[in-house]
Length: 105
Image (cartoon, rainbow, N blue to C red; front, side, top):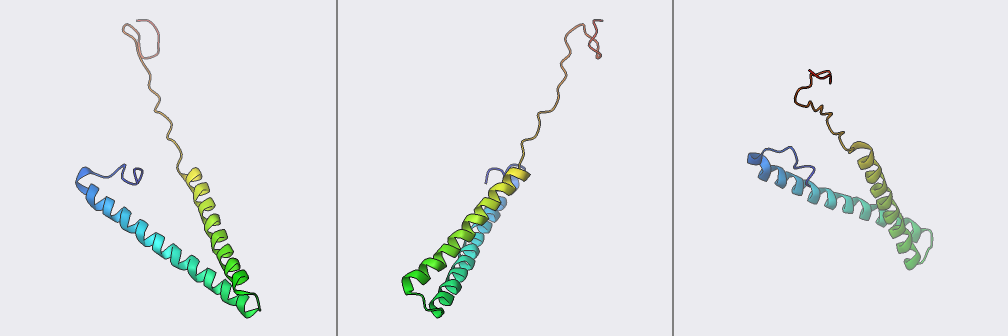
């Protein structure tokens, strides 16, 4: 959240904070809904194939957890690739009595 708020003007900070929090809540709810749908579909398919309820539920949850873990790994890789530290600007220091080329005046 700090990174998302870094370049926001103080007068817009409340709006930006609300937008970030809303996006996080909606994204989390949507992600959970998708993973639950995938887990339920997998469980139903395994039950139709004759698996026991325990094995079918385990298979559904395993699919959802695996997809969730893959998405977290992809997010980490994306963050490492996109969010790089900016190099410190090169500052040249001139001492009193020294010209811009570094020679004594």
